Image 1 (cartoon, rainbow, N blue to C red):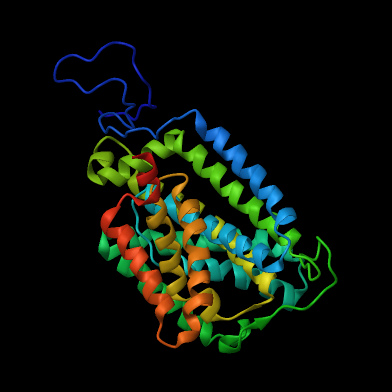
Image 2: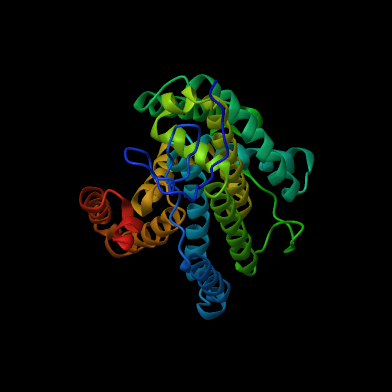
Length: 348
């Protein structure tokens, strides 16, 4: 009977016709190549962290800080999506559901029952995780593009329900009450510095979780499922269970991002937190940067978010959609000439 062994490397040389022992085995017979282990990874992370901490003190304009806050937020959302799609191979186009769940949970708890927004953020996480399990269990019976289409349909259904649900504001949305600047109130009107560092903490936390997943048995199982679900299941991996785990982790971080967004703009409606375009943007950032990699979503967000803002400012007023043409042309070029994403190009 096949058993599931923890990945390990053997010291002996492989015999002819035998798989190399230097490639850790994710399961009893499914080879899952480990992530590239390079010595510059921690150095790069430390350098980027120092630069991120110093950025708002060098570039003092509110516009610059707002732009980087959005880069951090979308990079975190893309990295959370990457846990499910990049590592586990489940392409979801409905992650706006979890974003809206976190935003609405924290907003409703605050406006209706007077909850502290930080408690609302924490409460939104288990709600989003529970919804992800309800969605994932039937949808994971589907494969490939059928699963992606199902997530699109669920996202549209949830948005329609939110538009017609008066308890959460319906189509009018919700406006969060203004409070004095303070960390417990999660509102900072005179300066964006606190929002900046909260977004940075969320991003770093998501990166650390992803880094840890890459180097544990969980990550090997995810990659085995991504490469060949039937082979993974044949050697004893409970495929559906690990897909649900990946979806739960992904939904938790996206929900936290939604709660942060609600406190940052102090207003939300179905069109701002539950649109299909948000799910596609999250996917796009990871794909352009390098899906299935640790740094890809961050690279994609660092490039595409400022690029979209720059083209909007420079060409958005022409009335001819020049900004969208330039933006779309660059995305198409990356997809055609560098399918592995920008991280793949850097590795080359």
